[in-house]
Length: 461
Image (tube, rainbow, N blue to C red):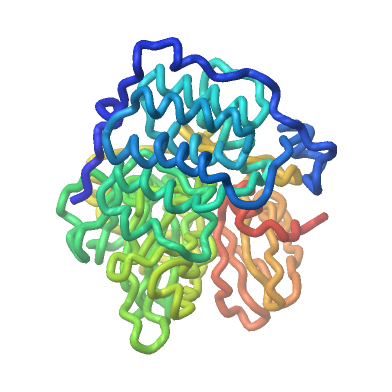
């Protein structure tokens, strides 16, 4: 079982003026926006000038002292403070990524302030009074500041010294490690089919027990469920349970599925985990405890290969080397009353899988926008607008604003783009082809779909 290291016990600043001796001159500014969209400049301002090329030996040594040695020695002292001052004086905004990584874990007020001031200086930002990590990280993402050379090695030293089990996660691959941050929970590394074993993590449910619709008296008709139908067999996954579990490994209609739910991006997805290359075992999907632009990072328990949760392809490890790309089944977001009326034979997960909790993150914690940094957001729709997302046969991602599409379908209008047809299903919407075959669509917040599909079309534009 993974254990969190007590971050406050790691860092003790010297009671010295050195801790606040950073130089507050403005970082050099770029002459122009260097290809950034106007809406990014309007919200975040112009980015600082960013050097390219390798770091000097002295700057590399300062980074190792401030971020690698401090983690190894469980201490922040005079050497680290001097090293951080040297880093700030180098005026290289790329190093702000490393500072932000440590800021995510540094709960001590003094250290948090010193790190924040260093990051603000490197990025040319005015000092803020709160949410330092969020402000810094949002600017880094929006401005697309490059990572410094040897970034993964230093980032790994920070993260793997905080949470056991991440050492096999932080490896080279087709993943932008700049955008990976901590979600505030530990890795779920329990063995397969240990649903009942407690953990200090977000506990996946393997082979969950189900009941008939008639037996599910604990569900109200207006409770939200995620409905899936495979080979004529239907099952409802109540949002109340998925907000606790966030990952289910199940079998439905004779097919194996991995079903992640990201509360932060409003997306439940269903991946076929039995359609993989020869010689590859069925991936068992787990929650890593990490996020990438407010989307959960999932991994395969057997190989520790990381998957892009939104796109379904392996990005690190043995499964990435084999080019594993998981195909999707449609997930229909609807209410329990409508789902069971349309699918009276449906099964549904049992109440005890909610572990006695009754969360409503969507309408409470996440109601006022993302709580983790996401950088810039395509302004064509509000951040938390619900969309139905699908990729067409030509490879073009397309988003359908759910409310608009729902109204059009209820009026009997046809919605068709290339091979994609939208249709109503039990109070929700799914995408099918001209023959009615499932194309694997799902619902999500606009910010999530648009950032993982930056070339997405928006229906109706």
